[in-house]
Image (cartoon, rainbow, N blue to C red; front, side, top):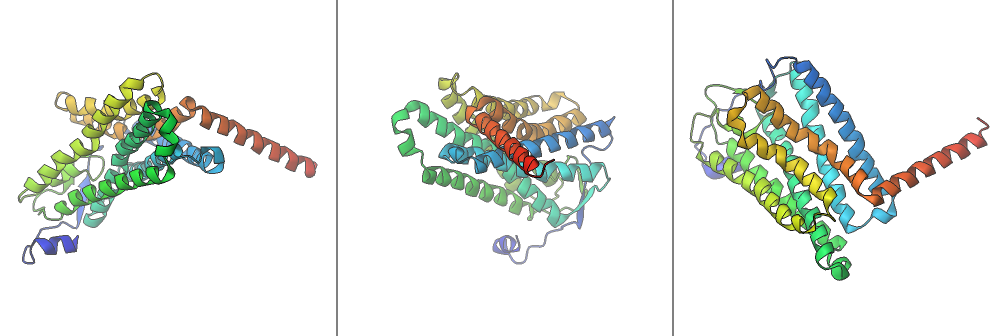
Length: 311
């Protein structure tokens, strides 16, 4: 970030506060129940995502390009959940509402990278299903490990650069008045609106990123998947769970109470990572069969061990 600022001009001085204060969930009635709900979702999400990752690793039959994309999806969901929920609980339940300037920007960067990858992981899965349905005879020749790793690598790299640009632009802002962020984490929009100098670059980037990260992937997935509704019901479920809550919140954000909006937006961040692996377990026969085999093997090994030790 220092290099970025020096490239803009060596004589520019920016007012950077030592810390920010996050107040998004403070004052909401009965919010402790929401913290308990968050913690429950966090535990379920971690268990489910780790389970799917282990199944993909342990079962050699799932070591295919398609499941590279599935692994990327659950890995991004797991990292995003672990980035967001523990910090939210620590911030509000334990009243650690202040966060240093550098930690805030770092936290923001990782949150948006993992959150954004949810969309692009769904795009990768959409491309995989599209090629499988459009030309099944050439599917295995086209969708190789090299193809999938290149596709996902380009997505991760592109998102990392886009989010880094948005975060670096924030270092050009001066915060000479309020340091109170009215959100449940170091959110990009509520933070740059606190600045007292030119906001134009951050406004432009803040407007473009949702288009690139949310709307374009949603349009691509919707137009391609709708042609194969019956064969892609599981994948379409992931798309609905990820996008509809976001669209609803932003379409009706001006008609709901600010506290309700904060709760709704936070739910759009934590529910999809929990539901994605559950849907894959329920909708994907290969994963269900793998879980049964792993469970049976585990029971058999335990029975043999118990028999050998005469327990």
